[in-house]
Length: 258
Image (cartoon, rainbow, N blue to C red; front, side, top):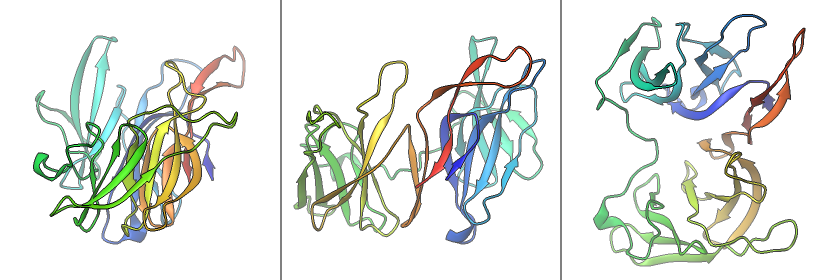
């Protein structure tokens, strides 16, 4: 499923009362035929498929983060391409207020404490399972290691071993991983085969740690695992031509569901 949106690669999940009512919050620009347009904050409901714009102010709304109270969304806005300020948006009223420089939300990923990270893990790659019993991380960019969170003893160590479409192996890279909500599968991202410094992208694979089975999934910029059967991600950016008089090409991306 592809949603025809022009957006930035910044998404977060706002968990409602039930898993069926999960919402994805993202930054999206609708280009205007004349005059200036802005990146605004939108919500996509994984339950109904509804798209709702919740910000309307004449400023760009970048890098949205769901606040811990589930009522507000934190975002950044850059003035005249220079100074960046942080703002808080009330989801219900649409009211926006500037924040102090240090006021920023927390990441969705469960960040383990230093004492719970195996010493061989690549820096910044450790992720705690939903039930807090295991930690997964990349090792030397070639293996995914899963350990017991309490004892740090190995539960599984699985070589990546995947290859480009040309048959060449992926180079060692500090792979990103994300646990499924039921803790059975890992979504592992590695620097994409067709990535570059101007169009970064990850190739994502599903890993079953129990059977050491890898399955190719998709290519994207970042991903959020909503339910065991639903992953939402941002597609790599590409040039698209706007319609109408004076049409020009702009960088676009899509919000997609896997």
